[in-house]
Image (cartoon, rainbow, N blue to C red; front, side, top):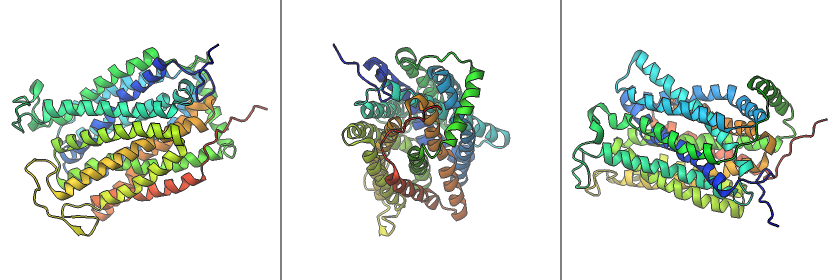
Length: 470
């Protein structure tokens, strides 16, 4: 008789079709973050919509800070409600549908926005940020019940790899269809941007919103069709809300019992804030420091996503072999040292004090100075360790939390990551303004990373079971 494969939660695992289809949720969702938040639209928003790179970076920091505060008030409760209702896929479908529509609306955010137009753009980006975080919670909460215990690292890492593969695919398309034609005369390019895209109106930047929105809809479908959901509890939404709210307060009252998870979430809040902050502001910093245009940022993002894709897959393998906690400790500590290397680079010097020639070193029109090349290469190493840490941190959470409270704890997990939209961006925004320096603002993230890395040494990888009811 064939032995049934057990999931992390101790229940029968999904079939390979089920748990590999789960990874398609990240394939659909992550390209929005890669194109819009990291490499293309947010730098466009900072430099062209706002029109001032320093004020634009500060405004992006405040945008994420507001979303982080709102998430702190809502996300644990939504996770608990989803636990009580049982099913997670309806929540995923709703948030993805909203994000897709919002992403398409980014097309109408024009350069030089002022007054109500700038407020509208701020509100739209804020709303999508919130929906993205909610979607991530419900998606992550499915992991413990569907994934075989001996393949958790692989499945989690593969999801991140596919997300970056989607981002790479869309960046290649945007680069060769809209950004490069009419700028470069390479024989394999169209003479003009496709679909009548007007580069003078920055349509090559704005179009990443609709493209990532439609992609998100299409590639979420395999998860919705083929990944098994937790059975419905039978509770109505109102009943689930009441029970979920009580459960959150009960969990908080049992904080001593969940001390290990609390230490882990606090550590993750700090190091994840710092690492995601590097990812968010790395392109913004480079655009202001090196005056990189859309094409430069696309190439930069393309190569960084390939590095992240490799890191996620290898990190998943290391996770299954050496354990999630050990993999996470090494990865986070490495990102701290790499961030120090990144902020040590200016247009005329590296390692803070080593002068470099500002003259171009080759005829290729992008990344043609020594400082730019070094920044580019160091960032690839950061991406590799960053995504390894992301994958290992998610797998560790799935292993140490009670399976029956997965959505609630992944809500808290999501909150500890979404505080990136509160603590790290606020730190960057305020230090950038205080010192009138992108470099100081960007470098302030190192404090969060090293503090979180240190706290990981007080975390155990043992599962905490829910207390038995009296």
